[in-house]
Image 1 (cartoon, rainbow, N blue to C red):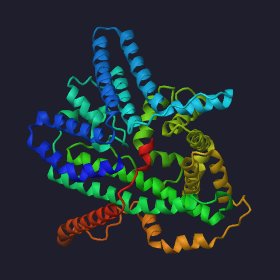
Image 2: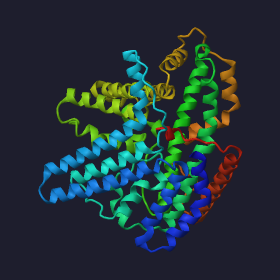
Image 3: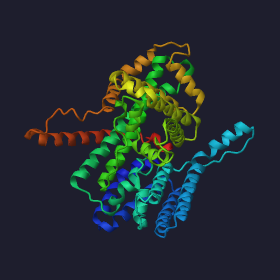
Image 4: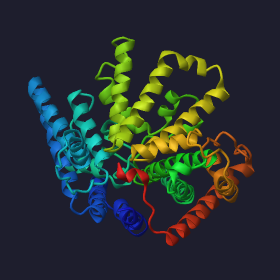
Length: 470
C-alpha cells in the first residue's frame, strides 16, 4: 500500500486534478469519490467492501436518525445510534483485536484456540471514527444528515487523509462538501505543504529511523545507557516526522482540492508539560476522544475524583486504539497517570520553571516512545533498564559516539525542524525586495526539497508510514 500510495500520487494525481477542475461544481465530489475508491482499491482490493459498507450504513443511519427526530421518535433515533456504534466498533474490533483477545484467553485459560489469519484493513481505525462522529453529531442535532450519498462518500473515502488521518469530523467540512473553491494561493500553499510533508518523511523520518533500527535491533540486554538514549531519541524524531509528514501531505493535498483540514500537529516537542504536549500531538485524535468519550463520561463536571477516573478511562482507550497489544495499553495508562499528576498538583509548579518543565516533558515523552515501540513487554523492560543504567553494562559507548558524530547533520536537522522557526524571519517582507525575493526563495527551496525527496524514493521504494499499522 505504501509504494502504491506514492505511485498514485506521482502518476495519477495530475489526471485526478485535471478531471476535478474541468467538471462542473456538482460533479467534483463524484470525481473525488471515484478516484479515492481507485486509490484504496489499488492497495486493498478486498477490504474496499468494508469501507463501502461503513459508508452506506452510516449514510442510512444519519437519515434515519434525522427522520425519527422530526417525527418525535427519540427512542427510535437512539436505537439507530446504538446500532451504528455497536456495529462500527464490532467491525473494528473483529479485524483489529480478535487475535489479541484470543491470545489472552489462551494464556489465562490454558487453551489453544486458533488465531484468525486476517490482515488489518488499512485506515479502518480512522474512517471508523469519522463515520461514528457523523452519526453521533446527527443524533446530537449538531449537524444535518447529508442527503447526497456521493458527497458523504467523498467525505469518508477522501484519499488525501484516508489511510492515516488526520481524523476529519464531518461538521468541520460540512459546508465545504457543498461548496469548495480552489484558489491560486490555496493550490500553491497545498503544493508547498505537500512537499514539506514528503521531505519530513523521506529525508528525516526514514534516515533517523535507520539509526533506531540499528540500535533496537541488537542485543537489548547489553545496550549501554548512552546508546539506549540515542536510540530512543532517534525513534522520537522518527515517529514525529513520519506522522506529521503524512499529516502535512494530507493537508496539502486537501488544499489542492479546495478542502481545508485542521492541523494535526503543533510542534509538540516545544511543549512544557505533558498536558501541553497532548494539545499539540495528534490533535484530531485528542479532539475525538475528548468530544465523544471524555465529555459524555462527565468530563470535569462531576468533581475531581470522577474527572481523574474519566482521564484514566480515556487514555486506556487511546492506547488501545493504537494497537492490539498490552504495550499500547500501558503506554496510554502511562500518559493518563502523568496527566492526572499534573492535574492534581504539578502543572502549577511547572509553569514557574520554563526550562526545567521543557526538559521534564521531553524526558518523559522519550521514555513513552520506548513503551510504544516494542510490542514485546519484556523488550520494553530491557530497553528501559539500559536507559537508566540498570543492566550493568555502563554509560559510555564508542558506537553511540560514532552514531552521533557521523550523523551530526541529520541530528541537527531533526532538532531544528521539530521547533517553530516561523517567527524568526531572516528576510523582511515589509521591504520591496522582501516581497518578491521571499516567494522566489520559498519556491526554490520547495523545488529542491521535492527533487531530493524523489531521488531518495527512487533509491528506496519501500517507505512505510508508521501509522499505517494502526
